Image (cartoon, rainbow, N blue to C red; front, side, top):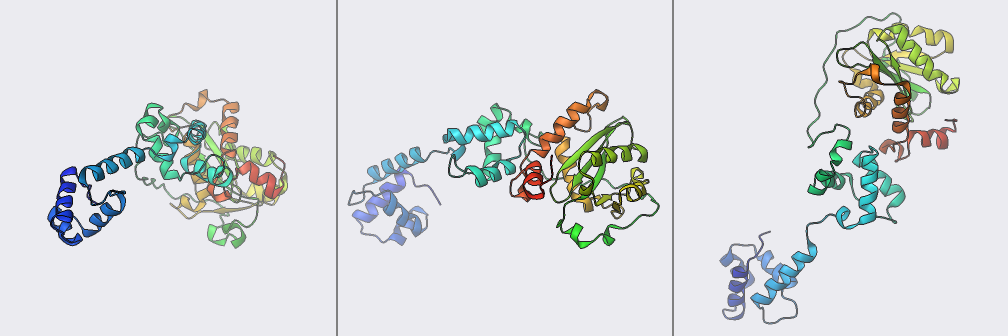
Length: 327
């Protein structure tokens, strides 16, 4: 809708008061819809009759000054402090928004995640460099890219993900895990990552290389961290690190399944977790300088972040409250 100037309002005053012109005629004369003229009379006329251009323009300017262009975050100190604190703790805007809606809506207010993104990229947000706490550390939002494909690997006794029971696919039962290896530039050291499908609880371990032996050692470490009954299946991609998967079925009765070639997105929980971890350990990280304590601290930071899929509970909260598993 066109913003009327003082000159426009003087034309309206003349045509309305002297010429007794109709609303549509006035609109055509200054090049706006008749609805703009109706809005002008309803909102900027005030108690002044007949219509007065000077007074109408003063009302318009006063309303604009009162309106301003500040978002709810900028004029709500408590809301801004909460959002800034959680951003600096590396929560995503969507996680913050969901947490606000569930727990703090009536206390300090609520804004959607898009409003938080706008604040992050506002002048104030840029001065505070809040974008550095976003997952991708980017100064502006861009479209997601595609991932590279890898050569097909043959694995003995491989069971396809299409033979995986429906109870696993629909996340109806706790105890079904996905595993993956995160690689880093110009080094053999990797991070072996395991994620439970229902709760998104995660475990990851620093490994000296990507061999099946080291991957199994990492998964054994994950199994040792929880009661044995918490492990019912593991889903792999087609990398060679899954070649010794049968050990888990023999030793623990854990079933194993494998994604289709070139379709690692079929184990989306762990792929999504890898994206979270990259916020702290980008591909350029020198893993030889990262301690096991630092790895554990990052792990628990992620396990204590609220998730939209858990109705903004954290994975640790979900496991304690819903599954009643000691953490």
